[in-house]
Length: 242
Image (cartoon, rainbow, N blue to C red; front, side, top):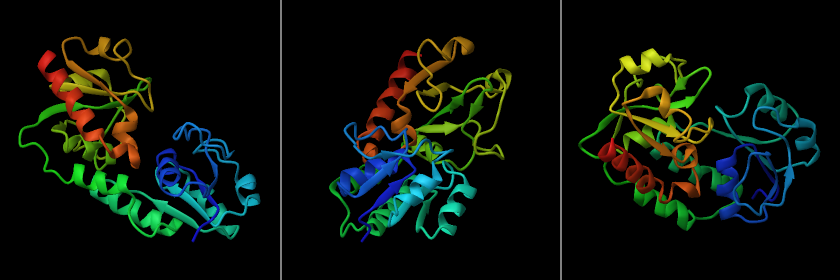
């Protein structure tokens, strides 16, 4: 059982706090959920204070292969810490990985929120889909490409990603390339770039857009409960009003 846990991933911080309260001793500055989390802060996901983490002598460090840098994780491992690394690219893989992680942390059974998430996301994807481009950054423009967790989330909400065939997970593209792909819809999350109704859609006049929660789209943890319905509602409203 891990009594002292450090989390380097915001969504996993939330998952551990909700399931095993009191076990977390440190988390990143970007770990905003739960809002009352009172732990040592160890900077960001890309620049964690490695010396501080080591000094805390955690039983377990939780990380993600995409959000955290490999050489930081190697440094922690070389210091004798046990690092549990996750990198799910689909919703089912994320649900299974969450169960494995929580057991590594000391949970004996799946928490209620994970059971509910399995049920919610176990429903089949819609038969009919709309095509979409999903920008995640601006200056330069970047979109979801192939084999991403967020892309699988949207596929299960009725979205066909027009850049899913790109060789990169998060390709840099031009506005012209997005327009040339002729998507029915733009899906604009509010993180990592804070797209909004006033920041993003104006570049693509005439294309319907859905502004969605980046937490619903990219976090895996308790936020998965209800996320499918929230995303589907936003997408359906955008298509209807587009």
